[in-house]
Image (cartoon, rainbow, N blue to C red; front, side, top):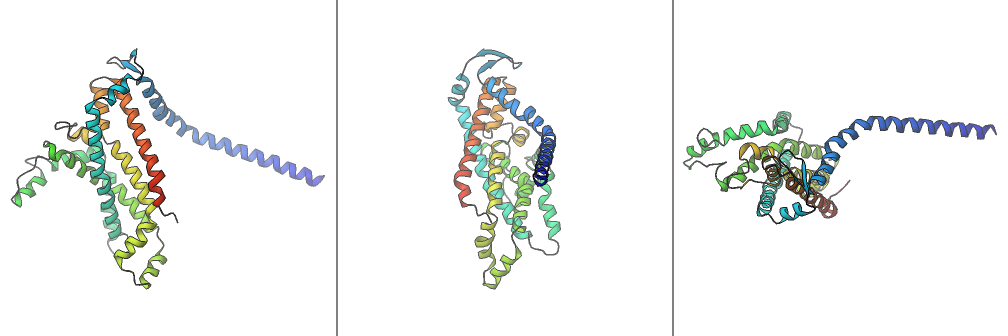
Length: 306
């Protein structure tokens, strides 16, 4: 009997401890959940609500239109133009950004003298905001005072209208974005490479594996989770690009840099068509969600988890 009573007392005490731990966990999570509700879930539900209505310039509901905003968006040539611009922007920035970060990480992950300084330099763009980076590159792209055109003139080439020529505007935005995201991507790649055990590299050297073969046959498969994470985050970030486009080109010239998010901004906050803007935002959300699901469904199969 005494043993049974002791077991019951222990069980009740364990239950009390678990309840206290659960209560403490809920208390600690409450601020985060509250912030998510205010800045994520409420705007999402508000966008769903506004997408079903026409609104006045103050954003007040004027008339229920159902799915007409979605139909108008999907029949708009500007929407498909901005979607094509977004895809082009992703193609120009995501592979280039990952490849550049991977190359720099491969060159600096060795424990050699001076490598810490290079790691610090390559990580610096992470500390630069979109606004600051855009202003820096606006000066570099200046048609007469910019450093880039100055070097072009030194080699006898004609100056380029980086931000005002439709042929160069998107490429100019892409170059700036690759530089801006380089610090974050570099830190991820470097962390992934440093997580590979040294014993594996030592074994490959004993087997006579060269640097290139070791990199492609050993390093890349072992950091594939990091590559996959960087790919997913980079694509989502490219879909949401706005700041650099708003500062440098404002969607121009001739809508050549008018991506989806900037098109949403124009419809909602310049033309005051909040219903259309909300419908486009929900369509963009669905596109990102679907693309992310496809990546986890098919691309993740090639990821090698240790």
